[in-house]
Image 1 (tube, rainbow, N blue to C red):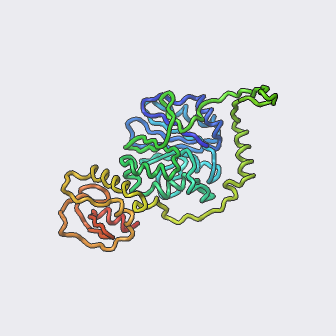
Image 2 (cartoon, rainbow, N blue to C red):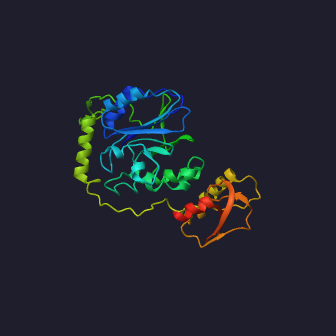
Image 3 (cartoon, one colour):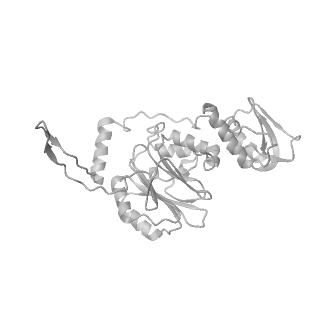
Length: 344
């Protein structure tokens, strides 16, 4: 079911034995992202199909104690077994950037452990996580508020069925969503990093003189795991026979209007606390404005506005260029944000 291992700043590097154990159990490709201490660049490298290749590369990489390092080991469920569908992914609308096998970037990156049921099997070329990166997380509202807003984080966790996500931002650092297991300073998305020793089953007679199996534990090797999955897919057609549904772009989260009213209020409150410098400024419903960015009813210049005010979209104090009005809301936009929204 895949596994992610996260080495935060200050922790020792993941051991070679642990890397081998995780690869053996998740043998459909590995990848990692690293941010060197003091740098605002994230380096991604993925598509390792043997543990020897990965270990050799990591030896040359020389991960330092103050570097942030995230590695992912994959079991394929959709999108095929290929280098581009290994994790991590870059948050970008274009597939050649989102699925890049090797890149240095200043964009948000992430790895995922779990299955996104709403997206799994939707495409033969892209996995559920790849689609999530291109069509969901690439929304500016999500990107700009993910680290600061617990409501956005809740919404993301709910959409991915409460699986695990490891985000790395060049300026904001590391963000883990979901339930993680900490061991020796390393955070694991499940317990698949532990080496399980096979114990032969025992036998005993019960009180009714029936022959019973005792309890034994075992772990398949990587080849046995592959054979098991191949048989499961062939027998049950889990994704091989699943009907492909074309994606209608742009795909997005449920609109804030569909979220609970309490969540919308909480998001607006958090946003206003972050960017408003005094309580006399009018509160603008940011979430509603962004969701209705393609359906503005009125666009006009606003010379009567103050020369400088807080732009509703980017949250920065700039010269206001336009006023936008829709159903029950009004907001002011700087020229750059207006051009961006009008062009989307």
